[in-house]
Image: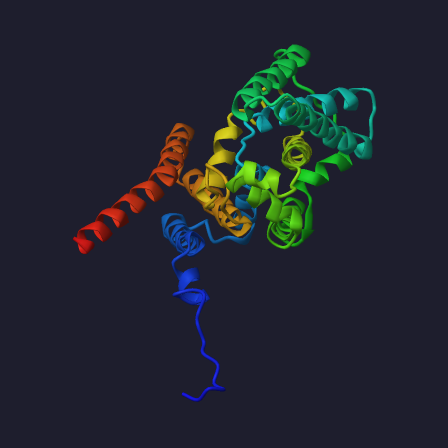
Length: 336
């Protein structure tokens, strides 16, 4: 080799293709395909275009919140009050509808209530320094309790006819407005997390908040903005869900916290923070939506789905830990 020849020293042992093939997202793609094939054989009605369109309603509203929740968990925090925010925002929209509010006003109220709830969570966590899991468990009870106080065992109906388009309208053929909104939000959150300086700050905060603070990142401001996002996305989900159901009850979206956290963790977001991608959350949303819809076509009871969600949450948290321990033990045995 001549003196002028440049020596190539790779900065990684494996190429991008190898890393992508071994990524969690690649496994999720395989699972999506497998679930789709199993459902198509399990029920002759699954492959109908309108049935597939209906399947998207099983996950779009939850996925809207999951995108924001992913950023919160990557930053090392968690928000368990999102479903209760939906209930409170829906209750506020129901009251406004009784006084003759139109569709633009109802949408603004839903987003506004979500924003205020997110700001309240953010203030308690970043302003007072309280643990996010404790705060959001408390506000979960607070927001849901307010809905029960205002509504009791009653339900609000009588929403404007054009308000139903948010949850029941179709943009083109079988493509619903909710699915288009899901795709747009997935793209926006993907850009925000992976292609902006704010996204890099979120990763930095999740990996080491102290080091991020010393490097000049305003950790409190970043986390406050993330809780604002979860509040706004919860308000947006409240608009879509209330529009689709056509009524408001205090029990609306009850138990969604578990499903949303499961969706995020299944998507490869590290529950301890610092790692994860939006594409993983998108794939996890499809998996959970297709599984739920498949169970529905096979007339599987709802309690079975709850058991499945619980086992899935435990599994996706435990499997990476078990895999790491097995790899370490295997490597140690090889060295010895």
